[in-house]
Amino acid sequence: MNYNASLLHYPIPSLRPVIAAYELNYQKGKVISFGIYSDDIITNEKFDKYFDNLVLQNTQKQQQQQSLTS
Image (cartoon, rainbow, N blue to C red; front, top):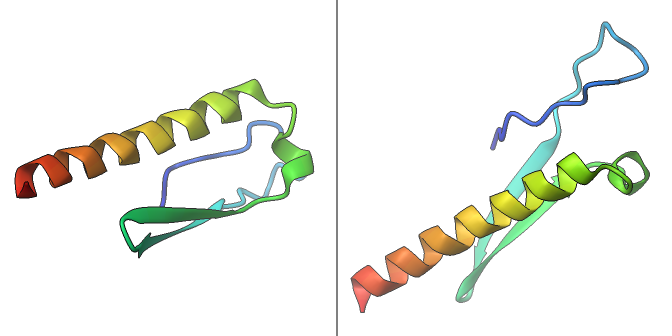
């Protein structure tokens, strides 16, 4: 999955690292895993908002799908 996440101030400007993400449907929910070091984002409020929005989007999609099948 590519959520188009990026690092604005990466120490090596010539590199553009990709933040890996994996999504797994599990029982009645979904597991989302990121390949990123927490010390890189722990104080980054923009990342917190981004991740919150990502989780909310997936939650809303899940709820819509459940309501359609009910």
